[in-house]
Length: 135
Image 1 (cartoon, helix red, strand yellow):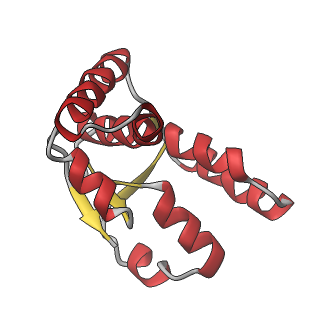
Image 2: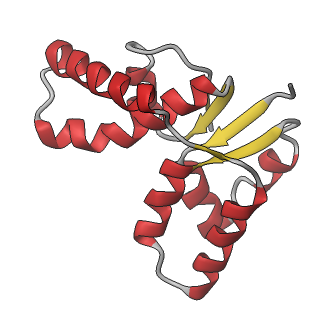
């Protein structure tokens, strides 16, 4: 099995808006998978036909990483542990839910998760082990 990487929406949004990650993406040296959760986040905010076109290409370019039923259940347990330890309110936990699912699906696929959202994903790693790269 080749090395896999999955991008969080923070990296893809920055890249699509400014092309700022072109060099890093080109030299990544591993196979890229797109997360169904990330694509859902991106579709929610799509504004132009060009953005729709790019997302459609992402969908078709590789098999999607999708959280399993076990990942969904684990995400609830992890968010409960975060709430207990950090005291986060429901709105913050709701904001973190997709990030936890992205991390769990990446872990299940043995993929490294690439993000620019350092604070949230490093905090999530306190509760679940997954490969993380910060850009």
